[in-house]
Length: 396
Image (tube, rainbow, N blue to C red; front, side, top):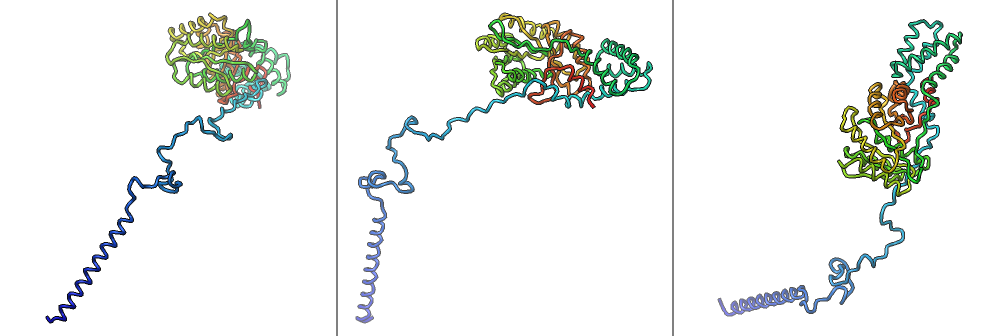
């Protein structure tokens, strides 16, 4: 290698070395520009410049927090949902007439059977026995059936001719007389002697007693009465909740006690609350009980005695399931011996063709049917009207 070659090689090495040095210095300067400034000189968000987006938009942690008291809400902001509107029960007058079609659908076998038999050209002994069978199958009862048939036979003999309209009019008169149009079916629910009327509602399990109390509250509210409910059925967990729900729908308060508590104590406190609130009537729901359980029946008697420390009980309503037929008479008899029943409430009357239970239970207890249940609707509890009831039996 000669001198020229050495010179060329040296120049090449020098150029490469200078280029490498320049690149390293340039990269170092670039990296230094990308590093954040020292903490002492770092800009402070919200102080050295206005917050922007991203992390810079956050409120500095040392900013004083405002309490809820200093926050002004717009006028249209609602802090809680408004209470639901109270229901307005249907008027009580004529309720049974409005429900007549519902009652008639289940009672047509009784009415049609009697009309068909009495419209025959000739009524012999066999025909009259059939009349008796129709009445007995409808749970009218033996003695009331015999009395009705005897009156019908006498009037048919006197009448002579029997047109369909004459037979219908005749049968209607006799059935209304049998049901008892002169019985006092009014409810004693008026405030008196400076205290509310007290209504004790009793019955066996499964008759719809608590529901009946709730519906009765609606009947009374429809008559513009101030009502208070007493949930003295402390043995069934859902009974008090169910009753309270019925009351809330129409703005009626409920007095209740602990589950499994003393029902007599709850009933006493309910009447006491009714006196203090100057209510018109207090409805006390008692626990359903079997009529053959002496201990439970004795406890029912205790409830009545404890309530009477405030004054006499004005009404004792016995709730009976109309579909139970003659078994309902056994229940009625036992309850009447314990608490002196003053009126009957027949539920599920639209679900049975045994409408004669109205007559039978009145004869058994000597007290009237005052209310009847004709469906599951909230306003399907109606004051009993003999004429409307018989019209439903004889409906076309």
